Amino acid sequence: MLLERGYSLVEMSLALVVIGLLASAGWMALKPSVELTEQLKQQQFLNNVQEKIVLFAQNNTRLPCPDVTGDGWEDGCSANDDNVGALPTATLGLNEQGAFFRSLLYGVYRGSGSLDLTQLAERTGDNPGDAGYQTITDLIFALDQLTGASIETGQIYVTGDGIDTGVINCTSNRVTNVAIALAAPGGRSMNGDSNLFDSVNASLNQDGTSTTPCFASPTQMKNASYDDQVTVISFNELKGKLVNVNNSMAN
Image (tube, rainbow, N blue to C red; front, side):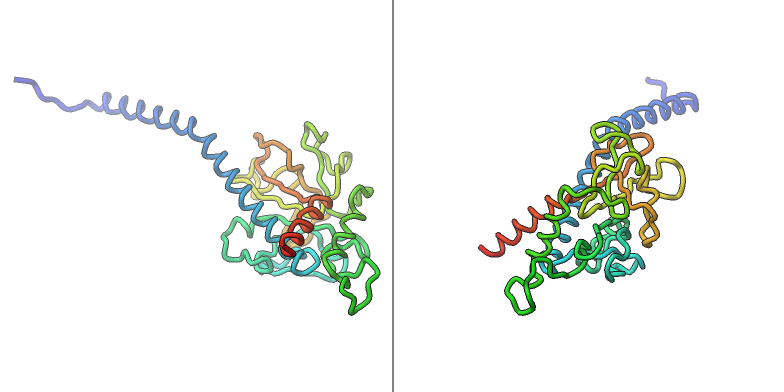
């Protein structure tokens, strides 16, 4: 007859420790895959935002202004107003898409005069009533003028990535102005403060009070002090997107 006995407290404690170690090891092995999946999902969302902005530009012959009041609608569309704020989710038809879109920083190039890309303007000399008056051709004309131009420090630009594009510094290494910049915060503040944005993105604000419109490089790698995700559209890239949309709509 076999002798029945229960587990002792020591044996149960050891078993729980072993289970805990196995679970921890399993999570550590799984964590990189989970983080990669989250990054890919964020990138898909950012690509969706880019598509919405390009569609807005196609339909309105200008880019949307930032939302600086937090209501989802673009604000301050008077010439040369705020160039960094929140993404205007309601304006772009993204208001029902969740908190991720409302957490984004959105920057748009708003140069002087006709180079403010949020303004509907006649840039190619057409007169009211002409077929080409204030059409997408006028926005493309402005993008052509801005491609290769000298950096405007008061307009949105990106700094380096610490590797290919040089030192991460908004003063000594202004890499290039861009037409549009989007920054998504990571899952936690890497420096321990209440701001989920890291590195130079931490100096940008959704309420229009950013003093330096400098975004981290889209190629900056995630590390122990940075887990944001940035995507930009250059002037030439936006021109290409608009031309492609225009051609597809014409066919």
